[in-house]
Amino acid sequence: MEGLRLPDITTALTIKSHRGSYGVQFIKDLNEAVSHFPSDKNFTFIVDKKVHSLYRNEIETLINNRRFLLVEATEKNKNLAKIPEYIQSLMEQGTKRGHVLVAIGGGIIQDITCFLASTLFRGMDWYFLPTTLLAQADSCIGSKSSINVGDWKNIVGTFVPPNRIFVCTEFLKTLSQEDVHSGVGEMIKVHMIKSWERFLDIKRDYVEILKSDELMKNYILRSLLIKRDIIEVDEFDKGIRNILNYGHSFGHAIESATDFEVPHGVAVTIGMDMANFISSRFGFWPKEKFTLARELLKVNSGRYFSIKIPDERFFTSISKDKKNIDENLALILPRAEGGVAKMLLKNDDHFRSACIDYFRMNAS
Ligand SMILES: NC(=O)c1ccc[n+]([C@@H]2O[C@H](COP(=O)([O-])OP(=O)(O)OC[C@H]3O[C@@H](n4cnc5c(N)ncnc54)[C@H](O)[C@@H]3O)[C@@H](O)[C@H]2O)c1
Ligand SMILES: [Zn+2]
Image 1 (cartoon, rainbow, N blue to C red):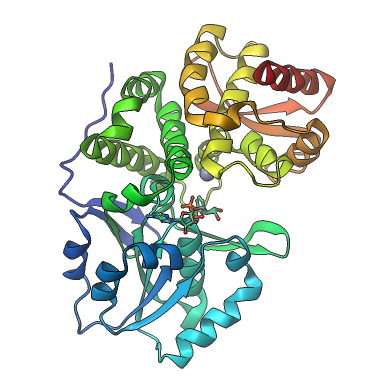
Image 2 (cartoon, rainbow, N blue to C red; image 1 turned 180 degrees about the vertical axis):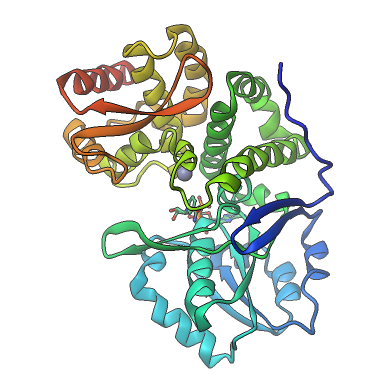
């Protein structure tokens, strides 16, 4: 069995990008972070309001009377319409070309900071302290920023990776259980993409990962390593990186059909189960694997697993997926040879009745 070679957790993980290499470093606690932000450098902090209130003392020590912007982590605040307000605040506080932006928060604060760092002064350096599991184990690497415009989610963006990333799992102690499951959903995703054996690893260790900080760190590192191998060969998402969308076409349609009640990584968890179901129904994947995978995906979806998904809203959304090609749905599905692959399926009655059977099965 091919294993994953894990570097020591204390050595930084390096990712190659079009902007040069950047590193992910695990830090013990927030006191350790202070040493990475020397007073002679010009930092401007962009901080999740909730994280600031939960870790006020530590974050105030880190900011140390420097420039900062507090932002509530909502999709509304990740809208293009809010960007001028943020720029005005940064400019009024004296942010200049050559300064460094520092994001402290989850994916929303990451997207806002990355977008500002890509465009303000035609490009600034930025550092990232991810505070959600989804950001620590997944979104912190990969260079993307995604900003909403009006009601269109994530349609404007750039590819600019942070210069440095500091992962501190202490933040996870205050994260809601749903946000933990959301992050684990993306971790399961990359393991499944890597191989069936790696999926069985995370399935076996699932309960322990949620209890043990050491094992959680280990699986965050594993997840980043698997993602690194993919984004290093296709940073701009022109080919192989598409496979990271496993669970996402279905997941996005579930999010949209339920008015975003289901957290992203949980919708992706259900989306993977649905992709697996379709794959085995169409004969691309053994039914026994679908059943085995479903045991974990069901547990990680929690109460959302049997949520009512309005069929027509689901089909409208999946039909509009930007990855579709002509009349065909472009879906990432597990395949018999192992891993996952992009497959084109006709958006016809056969597909629809399989989806409806899936919804019925979950509701019963
Ligand atoms: N750019 C990318 O590559 C990428 C990838 C995936 C997702 N995203 C985007 O990220 C967003 C989702 O990000 P997310 O799931 O990381 O969460 P988030 O930023 O939406 O935060 C979720 C909630 O957790 C709170 N929170 C954050 N850290 C906390 C902590 N340590 N303790 C307690 N509460 C905390 C936030 O205030 C918020 O209420 C979406 O907008 C999605 O589009 C971007
Ligand atoms: Zn995702």
